[in-house]
Length: 107
Image 1 (tube, rainbow, N blue to C red):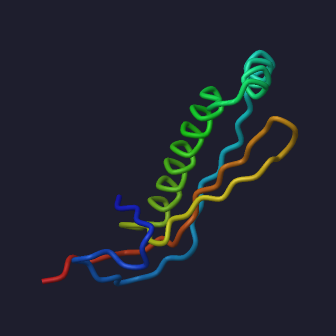
Image 2: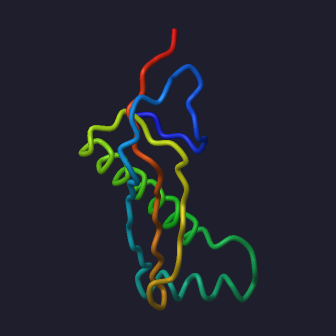
């Protein structure tokens, strides 16, 4: 399935707009990960445990987005975006959202 951040897909025409679609996940580091990240924040620099957690969460949100669009019968998703927020202390919510569409190759 094509997933793009643009409103159109070059070489295709949108034949039907199916509606909004999203994928959401909530992630948390364990207590030991939070302690390690807290120590790293004292000396500065990238906190690789959190970077990895957020990269994995984004990928999981996209997978759920695609699954939801496929269930609607979509061929593609346009205007895909991410949103995130803190759900509770040390819990991060990641949402991938966009518009599910049907497409046809032009020409």
